[in-house]
Image 1 (cartoon, rainbow, N blue to C red):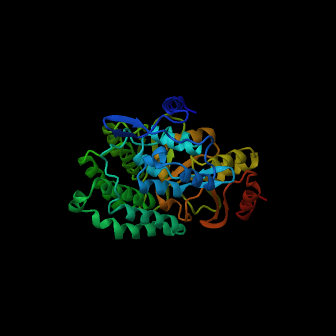
Image 2: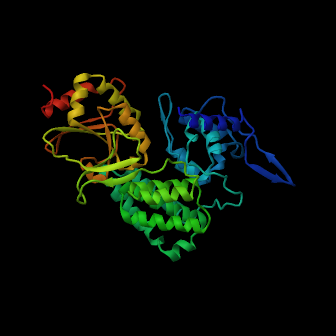
Image 3: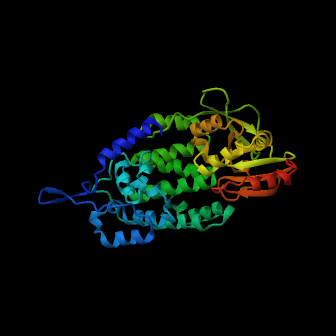
Amino acid sequence: MPYTTIGRLLFLLALAPPFAALAAPTPDDGVTRNATLAMPAKPITSRAELNAYLRDTPPANSPLNWLTPGARRRFLDSLVYREHGLGGMSLADLRYELTREQAYTLLRLFGAQDYAVDLDALTTPRPATHDDAAGTLEAAYDRLLAAAEHAEGGAQGQAISHSYAAEFAPAQTDARRHALGDRDAEFLFRAAELAFRATGQPGYLADLRRDFAELERRHRVDRPHASDFHDALLVAHRDDEARALLAAYPVVERSPPPSMRSFSRIRNGQPSLWVVTPGTRKRELVRFRFNIRAPAQVIVLASTACHFSANAARDIEADPLLRDLFREYGQWVAPPGEVTAFDAVREWNEAHPALRLGIAYDDAALPMVERVETPVFYFLDHGTVVDTVVGWPPGGNLDAIRRGLRKIDLLR
């Protein structure tokens, strides 16, 4: 764990009470009294335990009450439980409504407090005068999230675009934007960010830019807003703008964006990859053409944030024959959004020199991908997918990899 992360963890541990002392103050006759927080003796690891906690805990004594009603519902609905406890959750609403210290305390309910250490959360708590009432756009934002969740495969972007056009595009005028309440202005920004992240369409980035300017005008920009806008600028390959934003908002805890350049002319829509320049410490990404129509190759959709991808790389490198085949015929590719993870990509390449990871320039680099899952192995013959291997279970998937290699005549 990096020393900076350990330092933040110790800082948050110092702030977190063993069981009770943090709470939202309640004024009463000129005296501020802190309600005692009800923290379970052990983390909540099932839906039944969560229901019991919600049933038995007065709202004023639960850190969940720090969230607005809509944010609390979305967070609780996002919790996924596995056999041994919590298996997943969305931190989106925690970022926009809580500080790191508050998020740390809330996530202690589930034994997941470490996720708060580097969270792009608020730098100061929401003021007591903050308007918590649901505006006109919160329900629309819920429907946008539902459209994204329920769409199948490659239809997700289309579903998001359809929902956005019906419910958010009409508000993207100066007059309508200025007339919105603060919470609705924030949901407009979040909707544009979601639409751009899902589709990469420049029109959504333009909306996001104007929404960010509106939040600036209202003095409502904090770390989550600036961080999301910074990452969107990088995904759009606007590294100079992202660098300027970092200078204006030092609360965005990002390393300086890499410079982005191309050595050759690449047509619009032509598959291409961002590649970290090997053998140098320069913060630079270079764009190269990506030939997906080679006679035989394996394209691996992977992610630096996916431990299953790391496990697959480890197991393949441990087999000398597979390692050499993947070195010559394989290309590991991260989704376009990982252009924001330059340092992690460089660290991957240093750790796996035979399985170097590039970053897709845009969705055109991976036309065979319908839904982003990692790792996924595509075995191609002159651009045609002849076999696919999805995932990396605890026992590995080397037999399936060998079968795929045989289908494209790379293994006998």
